[in-house]
Length: 476
Ligand code: PMP
Image (cartoon, rainbow, N blue to C red; front, side):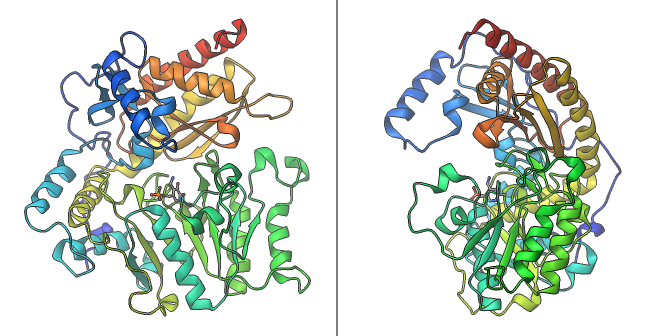
């Protein structure tokens, strides 16, 4: 079996994609946004598309094309894209090698259900190869329907089947998808509140969100009580919760506001779940495939989970793929236990193979760590502009700036929205998240360059300054 470690490695380089299309060397935005052609499409969209649409509401552009870290709208404005398709575009837009691999595959075979194929076989080798050696030999892979949510659903079904248990534990602030079961385990109340009849047996526990301790403690009085509370709830015969089928965790909460879990919290969670034989599911839909500077975030916590969920960046190209990787002892579900028509996108597998080769060859994981340090430096520098920069945090290239009132910690959501808008006007696309969308979220391509990071840092600085000035004069 070819593993990731067998792929040739040429040492760290900063550039994993070829030069972007001519003209995409820096952002350029002229006039207001949306420009006239974008405005026309946005208006048509709002007449015809669902009220549940999201991104174009706050990032009002219609997209023409993109290359590398840049994206161009219909009016010829060019943006540095630090949203990367919500973390999907590991190597930026249209990376040449994955594109070529997918294109070639399109002429061979596209839709393969779950039949074995050579390209799927190679993709399987490399995907399993992302796991640390100790887990790899015991790991099974299941190809899910092509979304993160579908793979989380699969993980829950797998664990329920294997344990014969009903309950599931998840965490405040967590996000796991928009289907009924995944919404049920999600911590974000606004999204689940309108939906009656969610999956029963879900218990949502405090997460180690230390800047806003869910137990109201300060750093100095913290004894990782969130871990202690979970331990005692699971082990106390009066704890109120029958032994659960699974504990589901994001190691860095993404939608919840870019919150890395505390290392001690994760270690103790692993200990207690192992002692009680409760499968630990890490949802690495967003953190996985290199985003945090290692193939998976759990490696940095020194734990071995029982189930790993991966999707988003798995094909590197934005072609859909989603899998669960899990310990073979759980593999007792029956044939057909988790089907789905679109589980065999061969072009996605071909692109994924090419992406993993590029990541390995070009030292992209090392680039993630280097660019992370560099970007964190820029984000820390925002503190000099205002005491409303409440926290700067993240792991690898999954970074966030929490804007909040300094005294109360209440989200400065209006300021965050303004910063996002001012950044867009200056040619930088970022996302918001966290409580009341008070956190600026950055998900740059994993192969972004030092120059691009400096450009983003400068734009953010100017955007925050402009947003603060607008705040001061009461403009909206
Ligand atoms: N889990 C996590 C951690 C996610 O960030 C997301 C998407 N943001 C999902 C699950 C759901 O993935 P999808 O939108 O592909 O269903």
